[in-house]
Image (tube, rainbow, N blue to C red; front, top):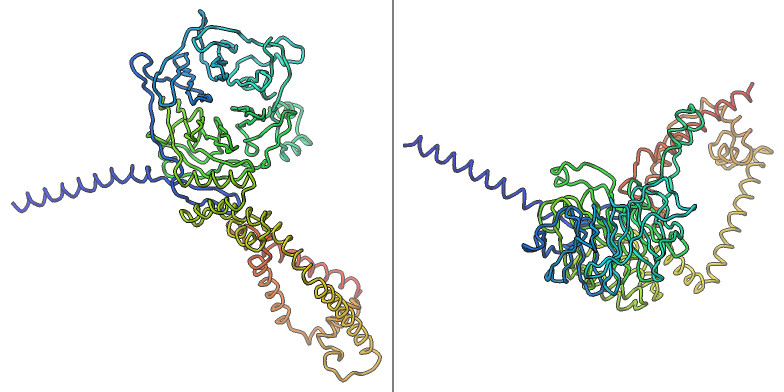
Length: 583
């Protein structure tokens, strides 16, 4: 009986542990936190920014299941168009994902692995029919209107196969085509299929290693280096002002660019986008540390950019100045998490739509109140309503007191309103050095103007005092050689006199040290060296804020080593020189 009870209890404990284990794992995954990333500060967790409200891949018996969807487009009426690549068709629906229909035949022409779509205001569509090497222009009913193929021009590089993956137009109906694996950038043609040039080309980043190898490599090695090609664009879009946004893969910097109509990158930030943050969910799915590979981007009416990373499944949101606003999404097999995000779009309500080509799902994500407050604050600031922006930023901080962009945004608003001290305080919290410097300079100018006479006379007084002290010590030092002096500071052999000698007459100073070496000990110099090192450490943490280093990545050992090595080198060289001079 006792044995039976023991076995039952043991089994119950095992079952309890199994249930706890099974329930805990998904709970942690679902609680994967949103965050904001700053290269200077690192990662800061923030409240939920977007809620997944839907994930659907099956659309009734007539349309059935999506299969490897590659691109999504949302028009001005919020109607949704999906390039269902695996089924070689276009799926269309309204904003509620109803009234779904599919087109797979266009006047007798069929698609072969299509990967991109653009929809005109009148409902006509441009479809990148990738493996057929063409772009089709079709009506909303599926009537074939035009076919665009590889352009015939001496200026067009025919060494690349014409395999369009993405397509869009500008305000004068020029057609921009992203050709697969083509580093020239975007191919531009007109309605007559005439080649108009390239735009948004990519370039090889400078490599010091390649430069060194070029100097010493053999001819065969040089040929291998010469075969390196620039990274390629993965996607692009054109906004209402004809600005072209591109995402670039296989590069560590400049993954996001914004090109003007003349082909110049005008996006203010050209550094690295995304991050390499690895959590246990990514490890569970076999995804290790890797640079982000942005598959697509979307831009809302206020210029806020969302880029989706195909590696981590994360969506990185940036403002028009390159500031990271939030990071959300992630890897998983449930609503709002992705295994292979292929495309992203946004509708007029701010809802984000993401396609997953592995899950074969369309995910819909709705912004939370926290996100809407951030967007309202940014919009008011961009429109010059700084006081109203402060109100919204304050509401953001009521929800998340440590949100960096809220403090930066308040600093920007205070700066524009002339409240420089408040701006400095907010910039310091957000660790925004350029803004702090600007506010500090403005406040310093005001203080100098207010106390100009005091500042001027103070500078003159200090300069005169330094000159008088210099002359006094120089004269006293010379006089100590002419006749005996009473002051112990200037007597022969005093350390203060030797110190002055090192300044005014180095040869004499070092000669005195050599002659009276036995009277000196190394305790005081070592104490001085220790104080120098201590002052260096203090300066790293107490120096003026704009010149402070990144505490998170600071290596105190290397900082001290950079001070000790020159000091020891000076001591060694000085010893060698004085040894030679003494004969």
